[in-house]
Image (cartoon, rainbow, N blue to C red; front, side):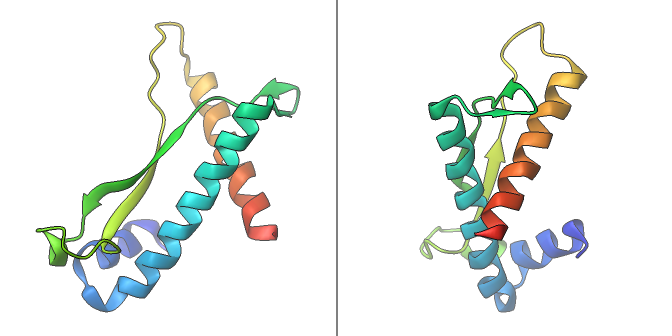
Length: 108
């Protein structure tokens, strides 16, 4: 699917609410998997999994601006590079970890 188009639909179209809920569950499951890997010291390709967090209320949908529908919010996985030594290669590694967690979640 086209991620930009899907995001716009889920953000603006109440008819896409079921997709939003399904995708939010995927984001939560991937975030949980990344946190589990971080806590347990899991290595992928010989490197530790970095700490990342996810938000269950990154943004309200446009049809839920008052926030009365707890399910009509956009979830997000977030990485905050706080170290001056973070490089593009490190950020690429973080994305690799997100993809690996996604793949494992989808397999289970």
